[in-house]
Image (cartoon, rainbow, N blue to C red; front, side):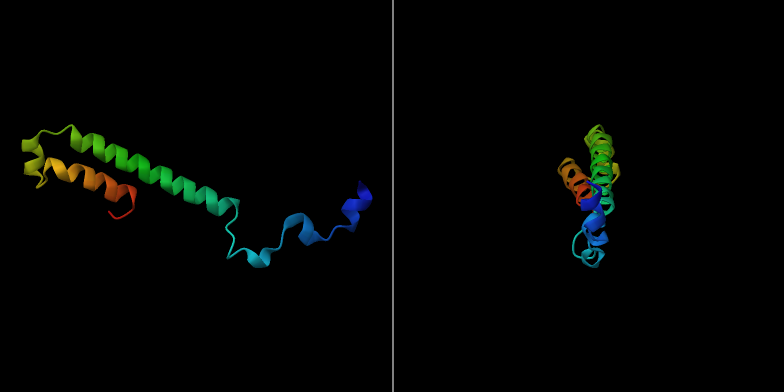
Length: 80
């Protein structure tokens, strides 16, 4: 086993870092997942908050019932 490890080049063991910009690593993917989960949580919170309001309360905010889903979707897709 030692002979195999000793003969291996360092790039074989830790990977070639020259392709880092074209191939996202674990940390980059973890950040993406965290951002998606954060946006989903924000969208769900917005949906629950606005959906609980009456039509009159929504109208006071300048919104219609049909706008609630669009606003939550915009938060999910990072448009808002």
